[in-house]
Image 1 (tube, one colour):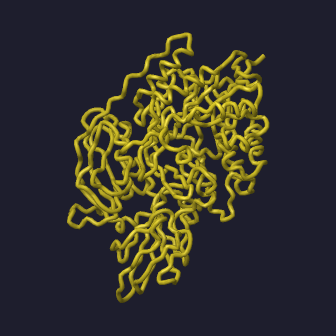
Image 2: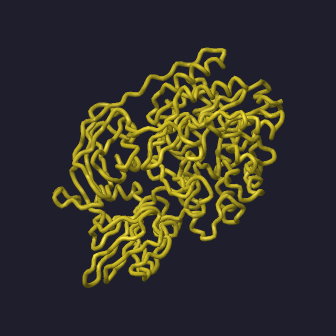
Image 3: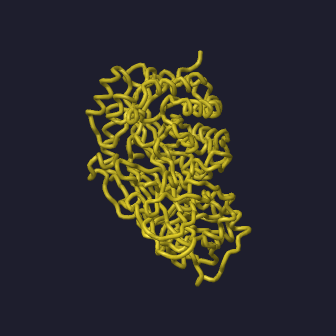
Length: 604
């Protein structure tokens, strides 16, 4: 007879027929460079956790409709095998929506090409896409399920649907998606206190998400599910950051007191995050509860393992606590990885944005402005991330009014001379008067799609409606897709006519520098004092965005992305430069604020 998997048939979980308390931690494979997976999971195990949880980001696994990627950095199968090798169980959270402070909550932006799209509902266009994704995903993870000898002991149905709750039948559809494809492990749902009312589904165990200890919340969950085990699926070990505000910290002692209390009451727990990692590239999400706020590149989260994988004081305190729940001594903690501050490097060459345009796909001609998702690029899956350049001609100056149709931020140029910036707060800019036809350019940045809340269907980016000049809508656009994929950066490197005369430095533009590494490369942090806003690429890898407004003032550069000898750094900078790029051994997350001192409503 086969051994029983995770069961929730009484007030305590059982696994293989024995009482089991889940001591879990979230580490997202897509936020950690693959060469570091082993180190991070060894540290999970050494801390005394018995379970790994991870989301699955649909947008990365199906970047274009019908094109799937489960290789290399996205090799989910290898990641779960590695967890099993470490002796960790796995709770898989395959979405399709994951929140996660990730662009559009992990939903692919090509879904928004359909103007009537209703995400996270039974809208046929959404249902069909989910079915095709699960047709690919589930056969990959099914052999890794407990019943087949694998480590996956539970699967989460969707994510925090109670906070969205548009259609009662939707959760049933997602549950059926899993079960009809052969997922027989314990199913769970995950919601905050408010969402518990609406987010469950028959046949799945409800779990709760919170940070502050609330026996009311725990009791509420117990009352909803008498004689069922209690689990906090997301115990928030820290919090995420947004541009222009402070770095959130959650003091170790405050966190430990809550975790200790929960465990002593027999509650199962998953630390979200145990190790946050990084929103490399353009993958950060945003929040919008009346004001749009994009999240920063670092997903350090003030978690027990830092962004670069360091064991923090939280880690040490948790390890001491978890060791009490093990009869055997815990494995040794792997030694810290070396980091170094390389010598500063100076700018060597530059390329104005305008000179890079012929290395993009040919521009799309459109009478009206088109949002990036509906551009006929990327095999008709549209543009997902990065910048989009819109150009048209004008014959007069006057008041340019965005009508709040810029998503999310646009630099405005007349004849390639900067005249102003439009965003959610600034809707108007004055264009200078002059005779004859002139080129008017809008460099629009998608700063990150909202990942949580009711606004998911309104996340089209670029220019999403008319822009008017002296009350007349502009027409006749050439639209360039600047998603800055590796192939574009490679074309720039190999074929562009880079300039070395810095007296003629024109921004926005690309700036090239070289970093020479003696011996084996190690991790480091890039710092950009005196620079404005932009993106850093090292050996073709997009490290993410920097922005002088902070709080984040450093970018994590994994040593595995460097090589011994010469390394190429390319910076796309919008508005101002410093002649050098600096390196540091430790990150600069900016000014801090204690999450316990914030009213809870400001966090969500």
